[in-house]
Amino acid sequence: MADSNQSGCLTVGEGVVLNGSFVVPDIASISGSIEGDITARELIVSSTGIIKGKVTADIIDLRGEIHENLTAKKSLFIRSTGKALGSVQYAEIEIEKGGYLQGALQKIDGDAGSVPTPLV
Image: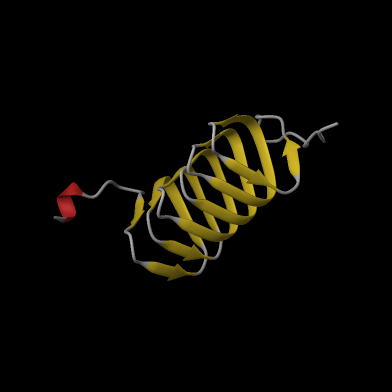
């Protein structure tokens, strides 16, 4: 079973609740609940996934819910079942019909060392 695990990845199954801060070098796939901060290269939140805290990733694919702070350094995809509530920073954004977004929005430059540019 351990051989099937991908190095640097985190999977939180449906019904699992985690509290704390998490740094994931590669892909974090969340079907359960996280209360705390998470940083990853790519974050996938399934339709049953809920994150309450500060979220930072290059790419975020949101089918569940993220509450509080969300930063997508490259791309943010809010799917039809996805909900982003709170402060949202993104370089690129795509929202499917039915996707929900509420809070402060700020477009940022996709380069790592850049300064955010406010939306007008």
